[in-house]
Image: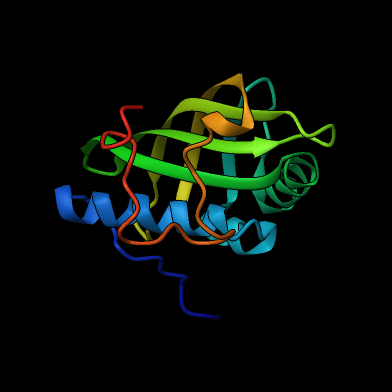
Length: 158
């Protein structure tokens, strides 16, 4: 028998721990590494992402692998919207381009529910894509983690 996985910060969340959880999630997604991202979710995690409903880490990895094969130069910013106990609500935006070179800014909201070990057990996302011109891009840091000094969504007027 092995010790349970822990993914701090753990619920119940206060404002600081919720903000840290959001930033850690953003950093993970900006890695564009499906296996790394999937480790933040319970083995039986339930998702709704647009019209897809991945269940468990294997389906999450498959979903994210497909996503990042299609969404090139992906850069994401998440922002805490609300928190209560084991739940966090975020709003986010990410920029990416497709194979033809068309840029998009995708806007959305997520509702998260965490298990006591800090792993996310439920993730419900609503997302809309807006085609943008290359010169309208706002997320221009090198691929990977958003630099600490880079403005967030509110500072960017998003």
